Image (cartoon, rainbow, N blue to C red; front, side, top):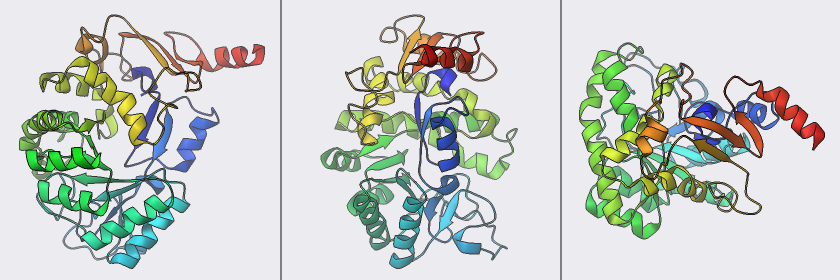
Amino acid sequence: MIGRGFTTVRDAGGADWGLAEAVEEGSILGPRLLFTGTSGHALSQTGGHGDFRGKGEDCCCCGAALRGIGRVCDGVDACRAAARDELRKGAHCIKVMASGGVSSPTDRLTNTQFSIEELTAICQEAAAAGTYVAAHAYTPPAIKRALSAGVRSIEHGNWLDEGTAGLMANLGAYLVPTTVTYAALQREGVAAGMPAELVAKVGEAVQQGLRSMAVARSSGVKMCFGSDLLGALHKHQCEEFLLRSQAGIPAAEIVAAATLHCAQLFNKERELGELLPGAAADVILVDGDPLQDIVGCLAGSSSSSGSGGSSNIALVIKDGLLAKVPHVGLLDINRQLVGSG
């Protein structure tokens, strides 16, 4: 990801404090990492998008199935305790599964999940810790319930309608579209190991995702850049720039979604996403003008280098240190720069 120019990422489904600390201390080279819970655990109701048990499985040890990305909790007290525990473990924010999803085996995309009381308890705990809640949600009923509870960030939102978008804008909530995920799964989902019946869920989501971005923009909703890609599909991360361009979003707004808007959502305004005195010295150098050709500069080579680095990004600087220069040993150079500082 650092090779594709991303100097900060929020991982809402996989990373934990160990990986974040390894990046922070310089043991591994990568973007600074914000995460939503232990091993990316999102809070889910029983049978929700984070409950990956099949219909014939009963085991749910310590609130988690033996596989998947969810932490199952039911009832206000259990939800409150789960949120507190994820915050104790270093989560930068809390993610909840507020609707059904593609990869979960026992729900539908249109399901609305968690009660308003459960979601409110989770949002209260996040607010008390000085952070926010992000909700996986597709449909207007799920999005409205999440917003009513105090959720700040709606992930995906493919079936967003005008009325719900207006509510989001009035509340200052953010939309994080992830259209590239569905496009990639349509092409490569089966080869990546996803069962065919789950890939079939993806079909309508691509066009709905493009439509929802247009709806959000016309309603004044701030959008952030997202991907939601898994495993080998990470190489398509920059294709999201292309899809947003196809949805009619101007290049300047796409760049803002990948920089300033994310910093605002993360409560790190004037620290990240802007070139300001006192902000992190994060800079990328591209071959071209992204405001004139954002696809060619950022999306045109999203998987061209094998590792997913774009050949059109000539230089990446993170915290004032080199993070990408072709054919150069970066850790050695940065040690020399810091040592001579």
